[in-house]
Amino acid sequence: MPADPTPLVSIIVPCHIASPHQAELLDETLGTVAAQTCRDYELIVVDDGSPLAVGPITGRHPGAVTLRQANAGPAVARAFDCYIIPPSAAMFRREVVEVVGGFRDPWGADDLDFYLRVARRYRGWCYEAPAVTRYRRYGASSSRAGERMLRSVRAVYERQWPLVRGDAAGEAAFHRGLTLLTDIFTGCLVENVRDRVRARRWRLALRAALLLASAPPAATR
Image (cartoon, rainbow, N blue to C red; front, side, top):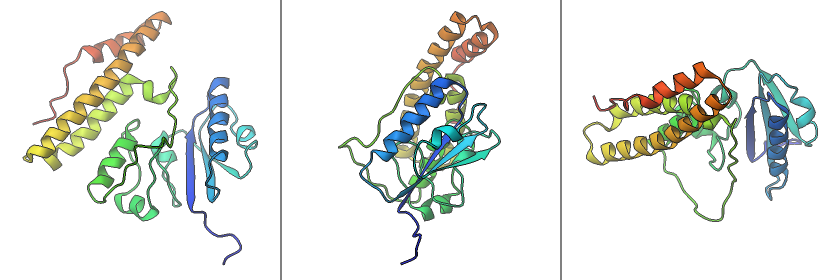
């Protein structure tokens, strides 16, 4: 056996820390990694050009390694030549990630884009219980940015339409998925408009409101 064998699992945590609250959330997240029963892992924190220092946070967690890059969004932060784990509860073998080309733009729904490309090539296994992850929601979360997420989801689905067009089951799944995600992020967009009005950020509130009033994309051309 080699002296330093490759770990069974690599956990990659992209982060952009711009406030003390976000620093606290990162610290809590890294703490949940150490609380797992699996011990054969490496923990890589990708500092995506954070304005605040990330090193002091990761330094409190033994074995955590910090890599820093210029701000480029989570899709780039997750793309390494080593093992990759996408968000939350999904795990992939390294060869699967390499074959489909890893994460890519559009920024925001890069995990959805990745999942769909993997699903076209490989079988997957899903487990309903027990729960393997907790999803934390807060106002500044990137997934609550309705404007960005709506545009990103639409871009992902536009890529998928040529692959399902003409297949009744595929088209039905396409419309069901797009409708579900559009509803979710439209709700986020409503929250964004409300929050921006309260903060008197009129230009951003107007931009979000105009997107909210726009018709759904004609994705079935």
